[in-house]
Amino acid sequence: MLGGCQGLPGMEREKAGEKYVENFVVQGEKLQSLGHVGELFTGVNNSLLAKQREGGGVQHIWGQVLNEVEKKVGHVTTETWLKPVKPLALREDTLHLEVPNSLFRDWLLENLLPHIRKSLETILGFAVQIVIHVAAKQQGELFPSQQYDDRENTKGESSRSTGTKKNGLVSNYTFSSFIVGAGNQFANAAARAVAEHPGKHYNPLFIYGGVGLGKTHLINAIGHETIVKQGGKSVFYLSSETFTNELIAHLRRDRMDDFKNKFRQADVLIIDDIQFLSGRERTQEEFFHTFNTLHQSHKQIILTSDKFPNEIEGLEERLRNRFEWGLIADIQPPDLETRVAILQKKAQQKKIQLPHDVSLFIATHVTANVRELEGGLTKLGAFSTMTDSPITIDLAQQVLQNLMRGGKDKDKEVSVETVQKAVCKYFAIRVIDLTSKKRTQMVAFPRQVAMFLCRKLAGASYPMIGVRFGGKNHTTALYACASIEKRLKQDEELRAVLARIENIVFGEEN
Image (cartoon, rainbow, N blue to C red; front, top):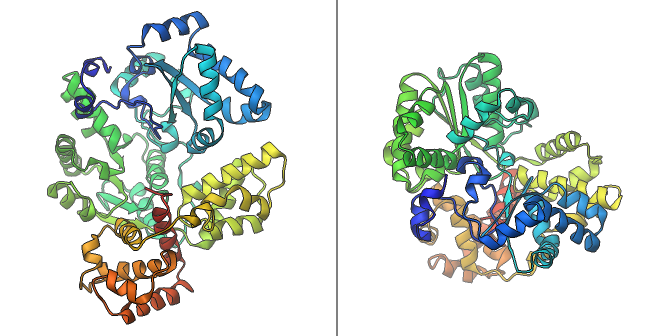
């Protein structure tokens, strides 16, 4: 599938849309959208190919690696963290591995990667780089490419037996497993209304919010509910990245009519992370026409983004305008009670014995998003199983210290400029606005937050803060810090916002 671009230089390959990876750790690589793995890793050099053939292929080589690593780290660690890893291929002196989720990736990077690399060098006789792919199914982006469709069609019933969904929906993302709280109540109500009558109300439905707050879960729930209640409705769920890859693949094969028919005949089209269409002119043009066709036919369109439509840079005005035709619903960080409920629900699903006091402790200290909560719970459960230790507050504090404020990142020196940039990144404004004399709510509130965090994280004095925010009087900085401090006593959402910005400051969130 990639053969048409393999002779191109790196920059030209990127322009052609090839998702080419060299010695980087990649999260959520959409392998399905690039075609079959056997086609993705073509052009294997002769020495590696010989090694694979002599040793029975990459699976056999990986088996040898496991045996070597187990001697160093033990049977329990190997069974827990390495057996679920899937070797994909050896290409250009690089081993490609696929892991079930980001937790596995982080654990391998922090604890096992040196052992794997050393074992590979011993077995193969030369150094090999390692690329780790997080399985796309964990991110809800299973929408297959045309080639993948063709192969699945030849398998008949086998695709159903493996749980593969032709519509791309993630099976466990349903309304029944979605925890409703104050921060997502409106979005949940809108999603249910759309699922009841797709195409009749709130078209398009545009859901926006920060990373890991449940947008993907909610829009998948709409798809499942629509199929259940509307019977034969055609539902497509995919990411904007997959949409782009589909477009590129069809352009290469000169099959644009197939591309248009594929999406413009959908009853419900769900696109996740629409902000990644930014700057992609050809993709935006095709999506514009797809949007118009579906909307004029009263077919439901559902979109998610991490930003409000008018905050997405590089998005054509005609698309921005259409995104605002229907209903825009935001999802805010969950409050304390909702975070506790989420932890307890996830613990029940994962069969983890989580005492209430521990769930309250975790929910109090991990405030950024649902994904961090779930990742922390999974890590805690795995550590408890591996060490045969009961889950207690002390264990949670030990295992999850990097997720909580007060960890090793507290030692990092923070400047006023770092805080300003982090606040501007979170609120999608410019530093020049933050230091200007503007008093609109869009600028005034972020300015107060920035002043408060400059005082808290950078240790800046009130006069210094005033100077660094456009020469304001120190009493302005004093008032801003006092206002935020007062609100923090009662405003759970504000605490979550500050935690998110601190994550950006300390490099825990991009």
